[in-house]
Image 1 (cartoon, rainbow, N blue to C red):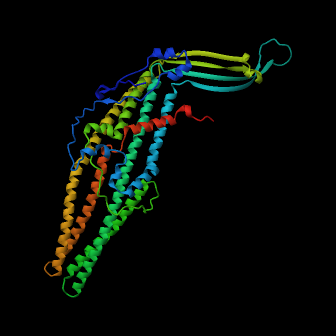
Image 2 (cartoon, rainbow, N blue to C red):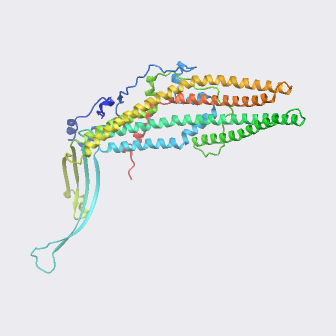
Image 3 (spheres, rainbow, N blue to C red):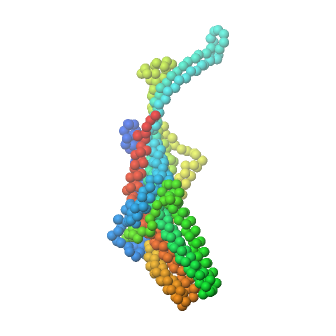
Length: 516
């Protein structure tokens, strides 16, 4: 069944309709088995058509440096992280996709949604139960003119076998609408699992690069401390020979102490980054994860994407759309609950006061019936349920629009940052090279007695800071490229999510249940 619903006018949500007629269901009621197979079937709701009143431009406002129009399909395919060219990173991601606990939780939510879908659809099928009973009863007969003393009585034992069937004909599509909503919820959960997978890969990449940068920063801090220590020793020797003033000694030792403090800070940052990486990979945070020595030079290519394609590429947008469709189906179900419910009942079995007679056809009993139940007064609960469903549908529309705007903002920010970070990387590289050359020249002139030590100390600090900033910007460019790929829905495939949902539906098929 395809859901049909009318949301508040302000939302301007439109859906196509295709609902089974009451005549078809009633006619099929003459053959219970046939109706069980071809009765009112629920299907996935069609895509929600929502007017979000957002003017989407034909192109993004920023075109980043190095955008590759031919890289669209390759970059957005699953496995995009392999373009970093780091086998250690690939290995950690593979472990994370298997052992990460948050990803397992997302998979469990898909299984729960599949079970909820089966529960929602169970109302469209007949309920059949088998029962046995044994009763022994004593009755007394008061007022009967029997002779003799005492109150006359009779004791009897009865046994019974029964097979009972009850079936609510889903004339108005209430059960089918509820099942369609559950199907949309299942599809949303499957897409959420895909989103969790993409997010996990991005987190692992960022944590991995953060750990590499922390290690490089630590190596830089140690090298800087070694250089500062040599300078401090040189200055101290000159002070003892009366060549340099005490201020030079204090300045040199201050730089050394600052560098040593930086070592401790970088060691702490490295341990935190590695342990975070281990947690994401699903292992104990022992701080021993193996990482590469340098940040990768290669990055995934920038896709030449268009704003209009984002709704199909982003898993969070696909999930929000499915929740919107589910909310519309629940409005249909609430409205259908206002109409009469038609049910068929049947039972058959045997009853006897002798246990051996239970399998004798002469003692069989049966009954067939139908009933029509029209709700008249329930304290306004049914109408309130309709209003609640409409309000929740309006909330889903607003949430969907908000999610869409955030998605566009993430893409625009990442695209803009690409160009800005590229410029910053060029500047920081130049600054690091020049500050290093300035420091070496100042030290050479100082040793020749042609410059003050203040220039040497300042040159050492600037050289260290410039190189540290260069490492930081290099890592930030990698992080932003990851953000851009994820913002554009890299690695997400709508068909994969549907397959995941279908697999869970098949796994939760009631026909495949094992009976005790």
